[in-house]
Image (tube, rainbow, N blue to C red; front, side):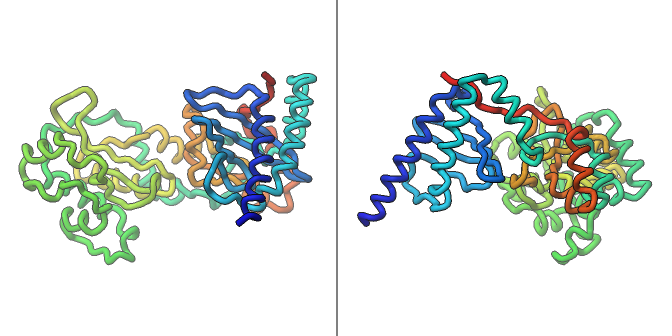
Length: 370
């Protein structure tokens, strides 16, 4: 126990020394958060170090290490403790450089920093050239499907429907489930079932009382909806999935109106885009009006004319799109190593040309002393 306390004491001393250095720099203030970002050299590698201060606690995150906080009751990973002294040395060098000339220091660092540690965007057409099998959205649709879905996405939003019942919602569900039988093949899919049976079998299950209302009563549906008793449940999640990989078919009041209903098809993930397109096609065929959320994004992805995010080495790509500014419309991400692995003989050529083809986003770099 004494040994553990001694180790804990030494770790605290090192972290406090690191924090004292960090506090010498002006942070970015974001509400109650104070935020710093550094790029530190470690032998032949670089570490992106994010530090956020909130309510007297410091939260450390970045590339190539597990996140930790100070103060904390949790035991510290030995690998982190071993690296802290080198972080302190590099941060001290950075402090000295920006004290001399912050503009020159930033310019030198960004010139030295390999592009695999940068964040940027690249046109999907360029990604398609280098990674032909990556996200085969358009090729997964038939020629006729592509033509029809583009027409749907370009059309004006349909007028709200006057009334909604549970049975009417199940009409939508029946068309939606029958649009993608392959999705449910391993779950015992059968054609020709009712929308209610499909919904009970394949939806999220947390229906929030939706299945308990009168099936053919507009008033019952309205009362259930207005009660908000379903808040926190997932009555609209018709295709199960993760935070961004499920498909919703939401029924809601049109914005700013107390009457009428609109049905919205929602799925942001490109992994579900083809299925969502086929649902929209099936609803059109069944003469069931629907609004496809993010229609412009769908259109651009199908036509390969949107921006794909490029995330730094060792950062995840599954949810990487969420960290990009909204104006870029990023919904998918790649890392540079994917290009290199697909084209190993062209790696030197790729490194040279990707540096110019990718539009690099500004880095939030801490470079000014108090």
